[in-house]
Image (cartoon, helix red, strand yellow):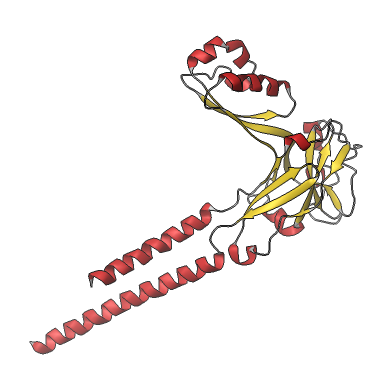
Length: 278
């Protein structure tokens, strides 16, 4: 009887653990693209996302003015008017798009108060450090590529401990709850475009698929796009297969119910036999 109880407990625990592991692999719901720095064309100020969107698409807009104002790119720029093989700018032609097309580094700072005091003038050039410094602080900040801030940060990295410069990134999402998930389901392929500060196109990558057939039975993947020069590649990271998860949960329920029924039946038989022996 003890073995059966132990068996039942194991299945109940696993039925909770397996979904937890599965959802740990769930996507971040936006598209963050890693950029290889030494392959970026000269004069690059922005890197935009291109999607195959049609003029009659319900999500199409002639111009996202807010993004134009944010990045200082006019409606007459090359990227706003680009439409080749159905590909157009996500930033300027997808409704409610939220884009960070200015490449940035994710920098991790950590240092003690003495280092800060000795280099205070340098630290105060970084807005994130102003009036926020305490003993052994740690800050994660975004640093735009080729900016004055990047030069300052590079100097700070040399004097800080436990610090580092992460990958060069651009990222894209929207205002909806699921962010980039719906875009992946609709458009399936993307390209990336290098832009100068005025929105002129310097070069465009190959297309890459952001939809994978394995999603049918493995669920939504974590997507990792990498732009190396004009070569765009996308890798997919999957959690446990969705089909296997479904089968496991069903099996757990069936076995749990079976164990309970068997226990009830045996208990009833035992009581019946004890009644006959009296």
